[in-house]
Image (cartoon, helix red, strand yellow):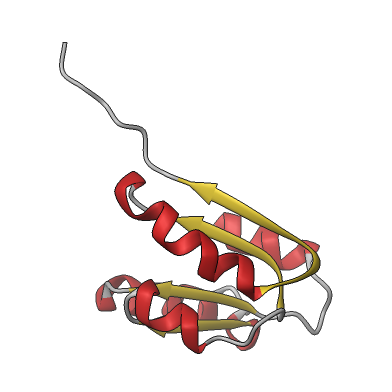
Amino acid sequence: MRQVDTLLRGMPEDSVLTTIDTDIRALRAARETFREIGTQPRVRTISGRASLVLPRLSSASYDLVFLDAEPSNALLYVEGAVRLLGRGGTLIVQTPSIRTAC
């Protein structure tokens, strides 16, 4: 959670970090950690699939979208993620490395 703390410290005081995940246990653990480090009011957690949640989020309302998806799904989410970005916003796409056995 150090990464979240670092992100929040670099954001304006009235900013909110929104995270989406399908893993309920991971979201519960994240919420507890946000409470422990005192950032809970500035973090919104949403349970669900990105394909269903992204279309419900407000257009042009985000300065930064960090998309962490499997390589096979990343392109499916890019259009929705770009729609969320405000003028001058930044999209970061991270996909896990594809490893093959030697």
